[in-house]
Image (tube, rainbow, N blue to C red; front, side, top):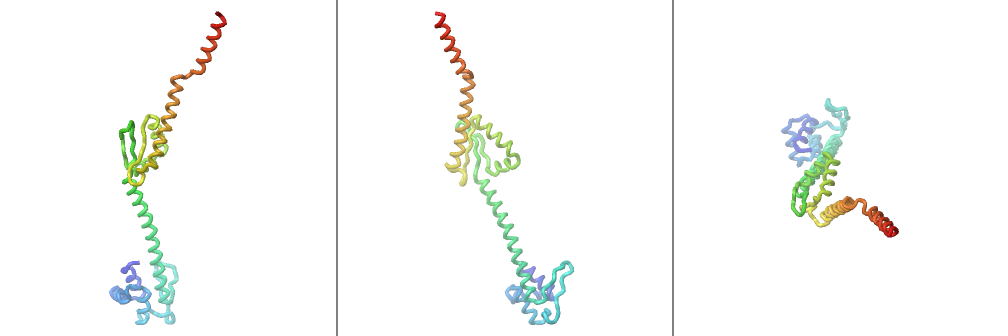
Amino acid sequence: MDNIEKAEKLKKRANISYEEAKEILEQCDWDLLDAVIELEARGKIKSENSGSYTAPSNTHQEVPKNPKQVAETYQNYDKNKKKERSFFKIIWDGIVFLLKKGCENTFIVSKNGRNIMDIPVILLVILMVISLCTVLIIMLIALFCGYRYSFSGPDLGNDKVNSVMNKAGDAAENIKDEFSCKDAYPNSSENREKDTENNKNETQEN
């Protein structure tokens, strides 16, 4: 609760002007509890024995009769507001941190040792959020076409992360080589068996 809110609350409860509320709060170093006690001492606020406070028309909560309890209620409200603001500040700081790191680090696509494309990591994350399956399929196909992936930047551009990316590229190359060999010699074992049988038949005929 800021100073303006404190003055407004005190003004409504004590039925005094805003200037009087501000003056009392300044004298009490903006402590609402001390200000309420001071106004009670001056007779500006009714004590517990002389009556009770009336609640504002827009609320159904019972207002404590004791001015000290009133001040403590507002102090608790102030603490809850601070906790709420602190929670949203943590969330906001986390978002800002991720955006900053996402812009500082770069995702690189290369082929034959030449960089084809580099984009901020935050853009890669956004693309994955929009269509994860499509992005993964494109990246997988690109691996089999000889493309390699790596990262650069203060957080992701290290040997540990890039070694994992290199292993993925090596695995794709090995799989592609295996299929290439099978395509080049589709029936090599069957052909060898036929050649052996033909040689046996020719020997027997001779």
